[in-house]
Image 1 (spheres, rainbow, N blue to C red):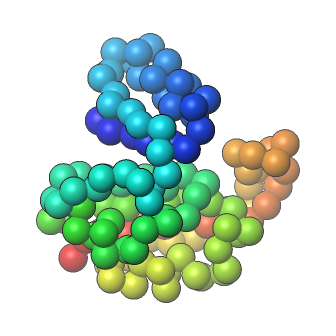
Image 2: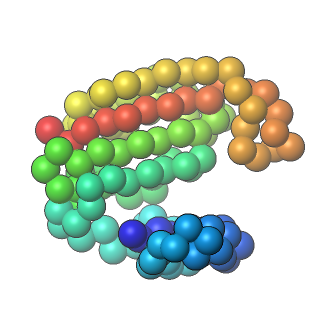
Length: 120
């Protein structure tokens, strides 16, 4: 498994959790704009409380055929339904907007956008 985050603390937490689960996790402290996605490398890409800073074509190219993108973020990251427009090259499997506690901002209630999209 591979993971990256621009925050040292985020990478350290992921490594700690992976170790607890007995998993090997390759990590990098980097923004997605600096991460080497490669070609047909991943089965799954997760964007958690962030928007991609790279062209969506780069994400599409890095997924194996049938690969999945999962994304969750607050409505303040992207306009309502904006996620659908950003990932229009993909087959949208599911999309929802729910009222839930955020991962950040003192866990305040907010609109949370969730999407699963598949590489065609």
